[in-house]
Amino acid sequence: MLTLSAFWVHAPVIGHSPGSILLNALAATKLSLSPKPAPTPGGVRVLPPKGLNTSIYLDLNHFSRHTAWAHSFMHAYALWLGPVLLAVVFVIAYALAWWRRAPQAATLLVLGGIGTLVALGLNQLIAHGAEELRPYATHPHVLVLVAKTSDYSFPSDHSVVAGGLTTSLLLVVGAAAWRRGTARIGTGSRGRGSAKSAVIWWLAAIDIVLGLFLCFARVYVGAHYPGDVVAGYLFSCSVVIVVSLLRPLAFRLADAVEPTVFGVLLQRPGVA
Image 1 (cartoon, rainbow, N blue to C red):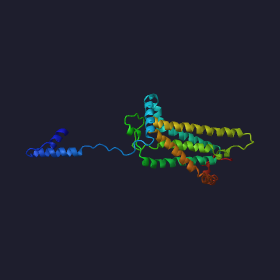
Image 2: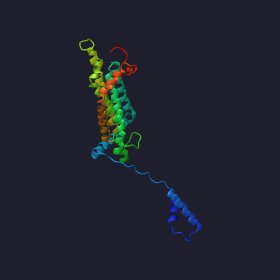
Image 3: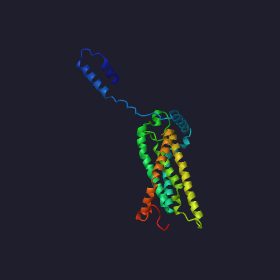
């Protein structure tokens, strides 16, 4: 019908009969109302290093096509399981600091959590400034194991969470504040305190593995370039370290809160 109408539009009108004029008008209206193709979203296709980003991404995508047995797990881990496990390890570390009555260690973890949230907020500004398109927008034939989104790709929000929470634990591991609740040297329970400190080292090591594997999973499922996850991870680490410089102020605030009813949020009730 559209072809016939278009013919009548472009064909010479013999005698300008009322029927031909009406048919021409209807055809012109139909052509003007036909749907137009959606505009291609603007942005950068691949950020530098373009060749390295593209080659590693396509290689991992090729690997993903040949490991179908892992698709279900990688889909879950890249989408929600990885962040949940990282959050669980973080909460365990906070609970251990709370149980050991180490309020400064708990305060450092709170600072790390705040730094991670700050990094997530700043990440949105960076993403809109970089405007890197998702890999599957540039390579429409790649395998994608998660739902496709229209937001920008650089940096990765998931890697920001991984870097921030991991750095928070590492800062607590190396802080003297963690040993505040341990037994004094010369007492019979010194070894017990050392064993508890070893638990934090293990938690930090687990967090590193979980976080790095989450970065790998985001590329494996086709959602990000390698540069996206590396940049998000390192950026979040930097933001958490900068926020942790506020620890003197945070420690004073913790000392002020400790005698109040809200002190139970930093350590379990009882005599340290």
